[in-house]
Image (cartoon, rainbow, N blue to C red; front, side, top):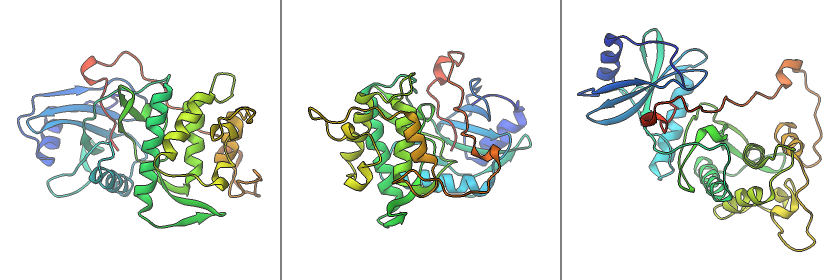
Amino acid sequence: MAVFTEISDEDRNSIAAAYGMTSLSSVIGIADGDRETTYLFRAAEGEFIVTLFENGAEPLDLERAFATMETLNNIGIPCPKPTRTIDGDATFRAAGRLVAVVSFVSGSSTNDPTPGKCNSLGRLMARIHMTLQGGKKRSLNELPAGPLHGALIPSNVFFLGEDVSGVINFRLRHDDVLVSEIADVLVSWASRPTGELDEQKARAVLAGYESVRLLTKQRQRHFPRSSFHPLPGAMPVRRTRFACLMLRFAPLNLRNFQRLPDKRSPAEHEIPSRPRRRTNSMRPEVERASLSC
């Protein structure tokens, strides 16, 4: 979230009119971020996060993100509520940019999650997987596959206390083996600076996940054994982030971590860097705001 595009009074009024906002009391630019322009609109109907996409966004992508959030909202999974235009569209254009609007979500992200937060995230991830699968059993190389959030990194998950209050940024939603997202979360949430997994946090993520959706023994083989077997003499958690990254990025043969021949260019093998951390430069009243879709 950031402010790269300044909006005029005319732009503010056109956005408010398009989305049926009345009595607009304030428009605040959210200064922290690195990709999109984001504003907090306060109106009689409530508080809204308005995002102007600087590049790379397509209406079809945002429509899919909106459909995902609407599905999750309908069963009470905490995420922003998509706000459509009065004509029912997911997007609008203002200031020469594609615009999307969602509801404000309370909470704040963390860069040092507690085991309690990790457990709550594990439960949420399992609920997302089960909901988006919709009862359909699909598999890739004998492992369950289906829709994933695609970016459950710390900056995209908000908390109130130890509980997840909202998950944002559904633009990277895609289909893959479900276990790959669990590996992503272990890397992002349970890694120590040394590269090892924090055993307590890793167990918390997996315990939270399994409290909602059980992992079979076949799936458990892809994770550090003591995360599932906290018994004396069990194998300690010594698999590093590298092992989880191999699980995440090795195409198809997850069991043996074998790489299949691929014709991608070297640049396409690079793992994207994490988004920059939030700073304290954000105004207190909007520090908890949620990003778009």
